[in-house]
Image (cartoon, rainbow over all chains, first blue to last red; front, side, top):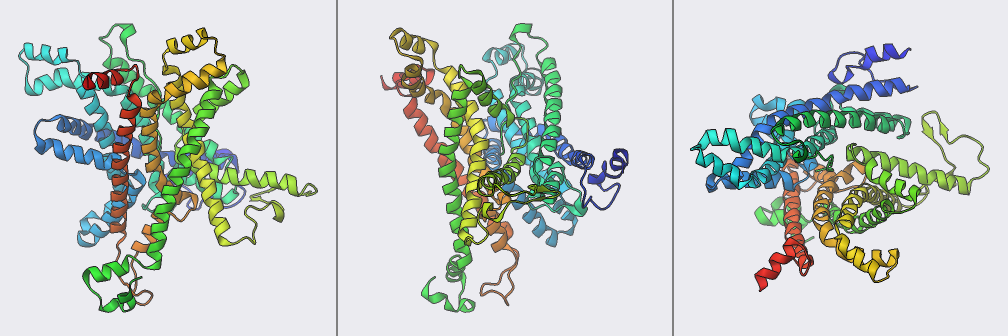
Amino acid sequence: MSCWVTIQDYALRSIGIGERLLPKTDFTLCQQFTLIGSGMFWNIYFGAIALITGFFFATALAVGKNSANPLFRKPSEWFIFIFRGSPLFIQFFFAYFVFLSLKQSVPFLSPFTAAWLGALVVLFCNTAAYSGEIFYGALLSIPKGDTEAADAYGMSGWSRFRRIVFPTMMRLAWPAYTNEAIFLFHATTLVFFSGFPVLGQRGDALYYASYFADKTFNPFIPYPILAMYFIILTLIVVGVFGLVNNRLNRHLPQEAKAKMRFRPNIIR
Amino acid sequence: MFSYCTEPDTLEGMMWLSCYLTTGKHMGLYISVVTVLVLLAITAPVALMFGFAAATAARSHIAPLRWLGKGYTSIVRGVPDIAFFMFFVIALDQGFEWMRHKVKCPDWSEPIRQGNDFVVCTAAKLPLSESPQWVHETYAFFLAVLTFAIVFGAFAANVLFGAMRAVPRAQLETAEAYGMTRRQTFWRILVPQMWVYALPGLSNLWMVLIKATPLLFLLGVEDIVYWARELGGTKNARFTDYPHGDWRMWYFLALLVFYLTFTKVSEVVLERIMKRLTHGQATAGGEAQRRAEA
């Protein structure tokens, strides 16, 4: 079987298109590359959607935590503490079992027990909490002169936030937010190792990598392949976020631009 | 556990709960909590040692040693650490068995990798197939500790490397002016002063380490996640004296609370240590402390 046929059979295996059975014996390098790559679909899906939706919630949380009104501040603080203070792995398990028991009383919620929605909700809350803390830190370090200038121009409320506070907050938070994004993509590998079941062997990249490692009892091929895919993904994320960073800082003199530092964190 | 626990069906409320929470299987859960604490207690210093060695190596004047230190610290980046956990456990296991195989069975002619199997002679098996259950469990735990130490050592190395560079250059120059050798400068001046710069990074790492402990579950150790799933599942009256429905949600809620408490306590303790280390240092924090006292 040539490699091209394998790619046709397995390239979309992770979303259920193509050959139904996974290879059982005589694993080729091509099969491992194709299947693990196919699994990356889920990692990108979870990471990208959680990141985009979480961004808005994170901004709300940061503004809430900065608010003088305890009615907004306390819930934001608690939300951030709960999601940052506990392991993501336990959050996945807890959420899965909560959704399972909710399903019995409210059948309408049954899609939440599947990974594509349930795990996404957990990742969304998690990344919102982590990014919210980053944004809050940035909010605190907005130069006093900026907001004073806004006051002097008679800006207040929404226009002050949209024109002055928000852009500066983004600019200051962006390097740390890049790390959070990388970190989130790495965290997506936990989804199928927690409570969420893998339906019809449609798993993510790590699921397929561990499948091969279990079958061949040789970790030295699938995991480096997985590592390669993730390094490529990380480089893409760094590249895209770097472009945004350039745009956010375009008004600054060239030397003053904050250097992006690649410092991914580890498991949460 | 208690004397009134002989007839669980007749009990109610708190009495029932106190009996339920002290069954033999729940003891397994409590032991696994201790396992987590032991893992943290062993891993943290070992990882710190790994990190210290790697950071020192990365500063070395000998090129291969420097490459080794830098390579180790940078190779853990960019890859999900859970992949590392799963990789190292098998790789270390096979590495140990391969080494023992080379030593103990030199006249073994067949290849070790036969297709999809990894075959070593019986004497080289780790742990030996006839050894008791607890040896197997300890071995799995040992592999887990080593894996955690390798992964977190790389991150600790990163922090310590930065901290070593953050010590004011003037301090080292003074030491040189006093005629100290490189080694003396390192041990007497650099190492005592670097901790205050390293502490914020290390405390962050400690928090991350706490939150990584549930991954023991993936490394084949019977940890809290295993027990929570096991104990929380629906229990039929036919097999147990304490029948109940699906309580896994509550067990994981308890774990969540356990970790949140642990994080909070760590935060408070680390803040105290930071206060103590800052005392008398030539940093903004130390200066603020001095002013507050004056």
